[in-house]
Image 1 (tube, rainbow, N blue to C red):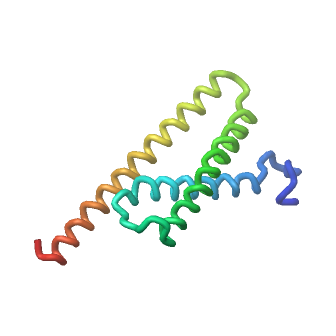
Image 2: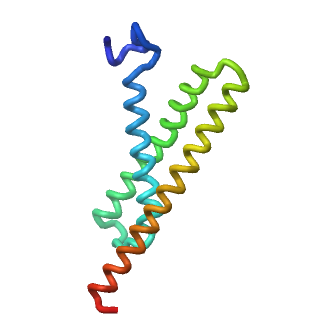
Image 3: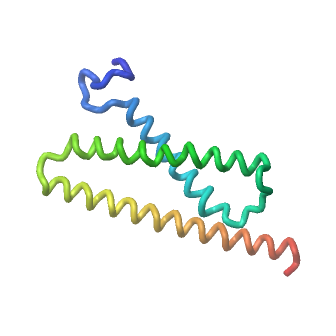
Length: 124
């Protein structure tokens, strides 16, 4: 099976596109981390970290569009009826909401314990 061919002989999935989708997902996560997780980061204007983060964000912004397009193509390939589309969209929204809540919980726990460890180290 040729990985770069549009359709595999036995199977409908194109695994090269799935790999691109996974990479795009990771870039979307990195984008959210650099936007929301680095609000308090203090780096000088025009320094190396400034340019690195901005370059990383530009690649990540492209990944958002790529992920949306690939997901849309996969949705339209498998949607035969409006009921099936609504069912798949409901599952996708539930999964996104559940993942978001889980990630927010993890972020809050990490932040809480890092603050406690920082207080122990500084003696506050």
